[in-house]
Image 1 (spheres, rainbow over the protein chains, first blue to last red):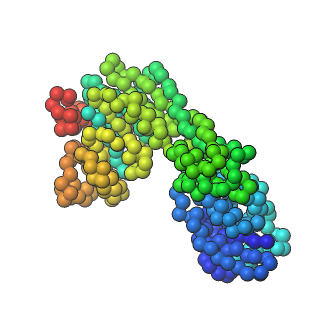
Image 2 (cartoon, chains in turn purple, yellow):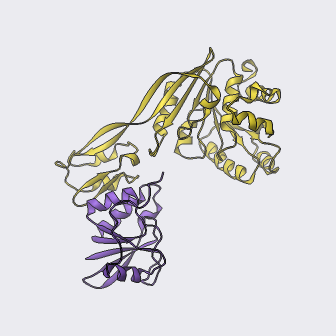
Image 3 (cartoon, rainbow over the protein chains, first blue to last red):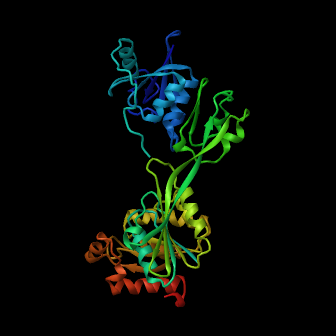
Length: 119
Length: 279
């Protein structure tokens, strides 16, 4: 299974990002190979609809779980069609710490939008 | 003649200039194209005699026909369609109704539905004047359709004033398109000058004729005048800031009804832009 984590930089010791679709990088952890791969978030420059686009980026990478700071309504809707589950971390962690907390089942699942959509 | 009033920075006096110029003309039509936050109507107090819904088209995907190829989503520049291997999701509020997704769909799974994105209000002001304004619904991403409609229904007007949206985005470009002359409402502050430079760049790229009215001319600094001189841009007039003006505006009244000073400036601008006969 692949797990996506919003990252501020390209290392497992980097801090997690404080925004989902505008995160600098997505760290993708593959639980079969135990490897991290970092992808530049191509959705972050979108003028609008970045949430849906970011989910598409992760979905096309076959990610099944994402660890996020917050999610807007469009990202939530998009995650559903990719059947990706989302879990919320609190700020101030590294990518690795957030992943450990997910495996320890310490992160709450996000079932609905945690922030309002903006225009 | 069509005259657009625009500014770059918000709050420099587009609406103040528009409604006071409009009120100084014997016969004219004004449209408020700042459809995200229209406010000219607050000053004109006309009577609405007609309302019109403005519709936009957005794609509807027939899941039974869709092959999940993803071409529609790849085509969309506004992320209004997101495709997974199992389903297609449409965010109709992000759609700009370009029709592209329907064109690229190989299985003809996309049709278009319509929904209202806002309204146009038609008002009569006095005997000879018409005023129209548009209002975009909250949550809709673009007011361009409403602006285009406002322009279209008033395209044959003899004298048309266009109160434009702030900034230099699609809405502003749409509002000024086809205008014979643009008046920039500027403010002599660092922000005012910086945003005005962007407007000047836009107007030059669009090959438009334009001049500047410096509002609140006794505030800020003189950089704007140096800039106008260096760039060879026409200065159409100066309007001082006075506490009395702020009071009049704050209760939704017209400066020309209270101040001879402003009346003279409006007449002067009209003479410069439209000619002696209209003043």
